[in-house]
Structures are given as structure tokens and as C-alpha cells.
Image 1 (tube, rainbow, N blue to C red):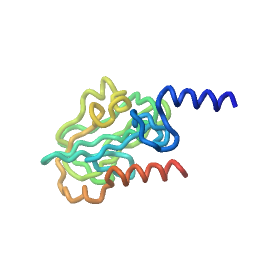
Image 2 (image 1 turned 45 degrees about the vertical axis):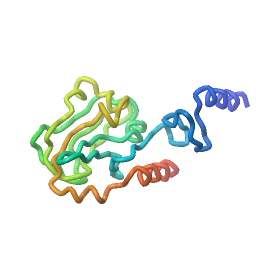
Image 3 (image 1 turned 90 degrees about the horizontal axis):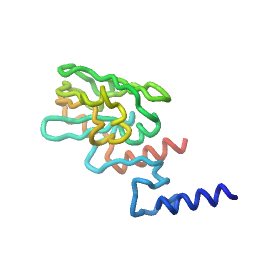
Image 4 (image 1 turned 30 degrees about the horizontal axis):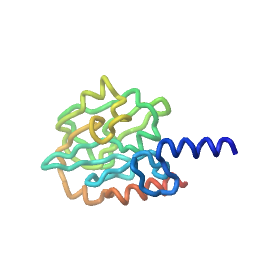
Length: 164
């Protein structure tokens, strides 16, 4: 009982909710497992995100994925000019819990790599959708983006996956 009371008090202090109701701080909603998805991005079932702007697609791992990995301590990325294939591994993320391959949600050529991740791999944890991006790709078949999930679909996918 004391633990339940403490948890309730902590939730109130942090303005979090288990009911799924929107709060002033939705990023801290317990019902969303402390992860978020962003409108305007596309998502793969292997937990990578894509932001397609003009002729370039920026790729990284989702907030949901980094949350399950824990503290990221090392990132292996390809070099610019390397070809990637949709669904194929282009690198790896090593955390305190595990090492996981990172798959490309689209096929194309790597045109830029986030060099900051070599020195500061924790950017994937602290800023997965901004500073923690991994590679930029020039898609060879932009229609591949149509097979990826939107924000709502990805959020539902994660909730169902976590329930199992």
C-alpha cells in the first residue's frame, strides 16, 4: 500500500498519468511507456524512423527503440557512398543491455553520416529525432516510403508489441 501511495504521489508530482489522458507534459505519460512518435515521420516495424525532405531521407532509431535499449555506449555506422537496401542492416547500436543491428527503411545511397555519434553516442538517447539521427540517404525508390507506418500506426504497433 505504501508503495502504491508513493507511486501515486510521484506521478502527481511529475504530472504523469496512467489513464492515457493528455497532460501538460505528454512526453512523460506513463501510458506511452515514456516514448513518443512524431507526426510527419515514417516508421519501420524494426523501430527506425525516416524524415524525407526533398531528395534526402534522414534515418535514426525511434524513441521507443532507444528506451528499450537503455544507455547507448557505441554506434557503428557506414561510410558515405555506401549503398543500403530496404530492410538490410547498415550499422549497429551497442547499449549497456545489448547490441542491435539498425536496418534501413529505404534503399539508396548514404550521403551523410552523423559523425557526432562517434564521440557522443548518448545523443541517440537524449535526442533520437534530432541530434541522434544516424544517416542521410538519397532514396533510389522513394515509393518505398509508402509502405512505412505513420505516427498513429507506429504508436499502436508499439503498444501492441509491448503488451505481448
